Length: 263
Image 1: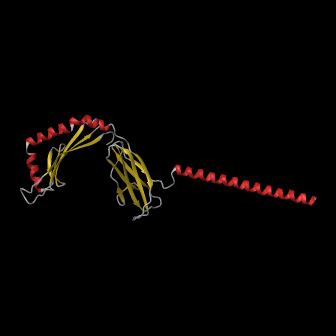
Image 2: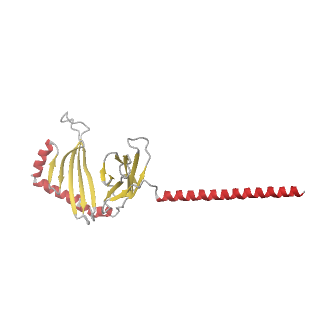
């Protein structure tokens, strides 16, 4: 997606709770039919538009129309037969073009306005403690304050993708617009290996790779150095004071001894 803008805009424009119990015992009040229309905008000026229309029954995908492909495809025995006839119907093709015009092209200005709100994620990679697990170590790669919500984080071990021991959260809303996302990796550390996480987001011209460094962060190092410096300084002051006190006590005893001898 180098130099390109991608946006996905969906409408659930028809949700029909269908009671087929009057007609057949096969259906019940819980059955429903859903049609979802999505517009995919691609290119620097949203000049490439793809319209996708999907039908589902009880969450099972039945048929899909794709404007790039220009036809319907079916996913069940019944819908495969239905798609054959719909593809041969010139009025169906015209209806799809009208839908694409109304739902996609008529909303380009609005989508571009939303696209201008895109924000690049800020990233952090750190080690976390785990109460239990199959591996002794766990890392978390976090993305903060990004928009839109679509984001992908991939773990790499010596530049090879890792899938075992990986778990992800959902994109979590932060405030009214932005999101955060966390990906976890359980692993067994090996000497000399390189662990990194790769972040892909629409605002990034290329994937961002963050390499794990198991040494202390610079800020933590500075805190330790300041703390040690303070400890050493305090120790030097204490020793100097102790030596001064011992010398003073020794001098006092010497004066008292001289005074007694003179008497």
